[in-house]
Amino acid sequence: MIVAVEKITVPMRQQPAEERIKNFNEVPLGYNEQEALKEASRCMQCVKKPCVEGCPVRIDIPLFIKALREKDFQKAIDVIHDSDSLPCITGRVCPQEEQCQAVCVVKKMGEPISIGRLERFLADNDLENRKNKKAVTPDRSTRKNIKVAIVGSGPAGLTCAAELAKKGYDAVVFEGYHKLGGVLVYGIPEFRLPKAIVENEIDLLKDLGVKFVNNALIGRALTIEDLFKEGYQAIFVGAGAGLPNFMGIPGENLSGVYSANEFLTRVNLMKAYKFPEYDTPVKRGEYVAVIGGGNVAMDSARTALRLGAKHVYLIYRRSEKEMPAREEEVIRAREEGIDFRLLTNPLKYIGDEKGVVKQVECQKMELGEPDASGRRSPVPVKGSEFIIDVDEVIVAIGNTPNPIISRTTPGLKTKKRGEIEADEDGLTSIPGVFAGGDVVTGAATVITAMGAGRKSAAAIEKYLSEKK
Image (cartoon, rainbow, N blue to C red; front, side, top):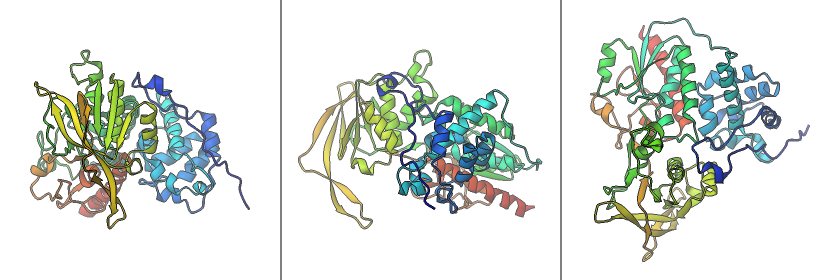
């Protein structure tokens, strides 16, 4: 029997570009109940469930959509919570179009089911119910009185802690900053992921029994060895990748040249956009160049615009097709007026007599012959150098892990760029020490870090059960 399926997804309402560039409020506004039910009705309820295989945390997507269609919102969010402890977050920032939605069967007939938008609807509905005391608090397992330390309160650490708490372990999360959330609060702008959403998701973890210790930088305040001495039976390192990369070109030490990590941390975590109300200044450039083509570059460019920049250039050495940023973020950046300078590579930054950046010298690129993988590498176009006048540069070309933990943990093996060596379950070279997320893979996505945290939690439980 052929089932008729709506080919076009239900659009999501959002702030108009001319309004949103003047504020830090969330851009997409989410589905209402009617919109969510209409989009859920497009799901074919496939028997093979390819979308589940496409999800890094293996949410039973058809099952939660079926419950949603039946208006059993509690059952739907319970299905999601079985695999995903942070659905308010993943519903907003997970690149579903590259994962579950990429393998959606409906995609063969039109646009895939907007799984992320449905997840966000259910998670936001659950959040509202929790505020009104209508939600069902997840049951706690019988406590095992076994302590496990989690290093870092980013997506990998929070997920690992939640999974262990559900199984009855005493999960204690150590966070180096004064605010919990890791990259979720310091790296992702308010207009993409509101801080209140992260706080509320963490509150649910506290309800599960997870404990948090702020201002505790592991490798400084305590070492991995100290944690074992304090009675922790296993340790998960989810410290992320917080050490920014630079290109190594002239002028990177000029005033006004920031790493995206520092720029976004000042604005997002330390509220520099409210200076002098909050005593954390940040340069408000009028002509800003952002270097890079990923989500962090988009976040930096759009943040600079909201801080009052007259013109923001996004300089990327490859084509738009090869941008690692989410397509919807690229579209929104263009809508907001970001000036994309593609197939363009910065050569050096030029400063004035006071050592403040005033220009960036660039060179045009073209795509050369395909390499062994079939990807065409950009090569310089001879004699194509040109100058762009700027008063601020934000370098967003990726991060690597901070070496503080590896340097203070004898026997912990790392890779060439500083990532911790770990097997597919997160087990490192030290018995009882597991790691996952960006600290193992280098900078990646929130959902892949969560998948690693979930997998390591299962491996930790197995390790502790075998250790008895």
